[in-house]
Image 1: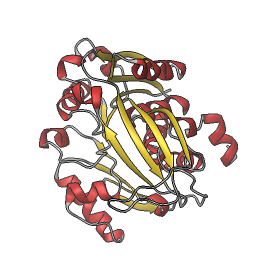
Image 2: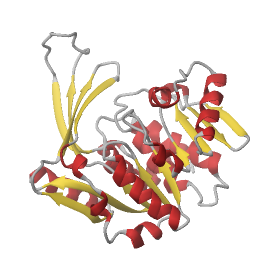
Image 3: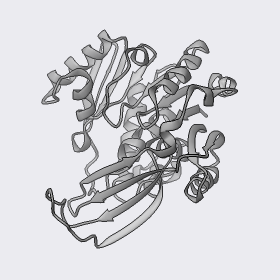
Image 4: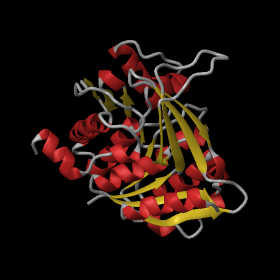
Length: 305
């Protein structure tokens, strides 16, 4: 069983189902509304836990009912929440999701307590990080805290994985501490300046990341599957063809499943990517973020393991 520490965000997600996205200045009606536990970090932690990893979470919530709800949700997944701090002056993060009938979404995130996570909040967590096989982070919490966590991981000889989402400028020091980077197409373009148009552009992107010191790149391509580069190996793997109902947690499920399956020796790199694609294919067929993330048993049943 892999041991995974995830440093990241905890949000209350509110999803509005709509016919189509509004134009500037337009008022539209939502025909359904639902709220659930979310946040990229929390989603990835739930995915890792449900898919077989012993998972620890580092993050911050507000001193409010939403924060209590988020902590309870992670505890129910048997995630170690000892690294979650409570911020008294700022509310728990939120995300409002617009989901149209075609299964596409737009998301507005309010960082709240997530954005108050500091290096000082990592005090006393060095042993938890050192005991992990992988340390995973995203961009819904400050990069300074991620850098500190990644430094602790590297000092202990552990692998670091960065999901640069939502797209943002990356501090060079964080890149130098990253072993595997997992952007989507738009995040890749924001970082490398290279638009994904074909296999050659993906290889150029991976080469750019290699120049920045990151030896392994995975670019998620939605319905077009996944591209990866690991050393001299590069390939694009096709996606599983399913009807997309809600893609909100697809990328987070992919990452959680990947770190749950990946051997610390990297010997099953391609196998772990394929497994992560299977888990994501199940996630997009259901409405909501964490509620749609599958378990090991559900992936096994769906794909005949």
